[in-house]
Length: 348
Image (cartoon, rainbow, N blue to C red; front, side, top):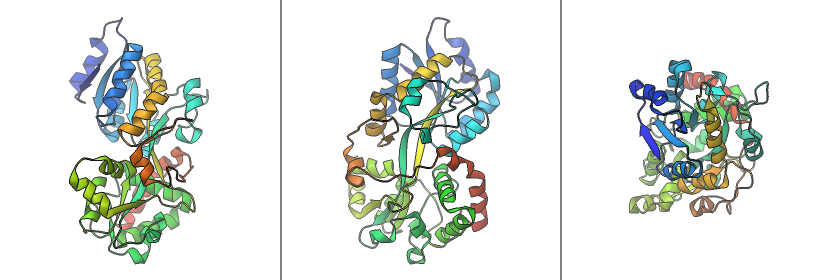
């Protein structure tokens, strides 16, 4: 059973006192707002008898709430959907390092936080999404958009739609570009992207895809699962958009496509740490990993997990593509620099 509540402080305070001493619970602060996750949480409760009390918020709000609550926080598990935010929670000491052989065996090193002195891991990534480029099949050649670098090429002037540069998805992409290119070249690249915009940044990723389909622009940057949702949609408008718009996974001939990560951690002041670790271990299981893949069109991180999502397969190169392998923490470490660069180049 999942109890879903708001971030109101009066409700949060009731978490700790509401459960009896015998009741097994996990108090979850989650930035994942996907209806398909409900079945995943219900199955955990059925398998373990541990009830989930869930608080929904965005990444930044959850981290701010943890800081404000301090040692009084009822939170046990934190789920965030962006590498930079996971990194920030780690650096700010909001997570409790976890020692779990099951998690160490399942989750690759580049999808984990930095080990603590005692070997504990502050957070683990459980699913990934690619930051891809959507383009007008009629007006744009694939070879003109097959790398992130080409978003700044003068041939694409006046063609690009993108959401706010300060949105976490873009901050993480730009952080990855900075890691690959160096700060000076990355800033020059950002300046070129701004020069190629068809309109001021606005809306979400689905809005960018629809703008390409409507002819408002010709190139857009989006997370892969938004396009996959449209491929799987029963809405005729979504299907029509995918007929007009194709996608490319950038940088297949160089460093690979940027991958952002959704991950989880045990809260520093967790009152139910053993249950919290059990929940994280469940998220690394093949069953849960397949929920991520099929429910929200994400790629699992756990080693050896095979999925069969037709939309993801149809988007990629026979189901496979080259992804970047830089540590996720390196992306988060550049966030402050990236925001300063965005301000300097006028990227709204």
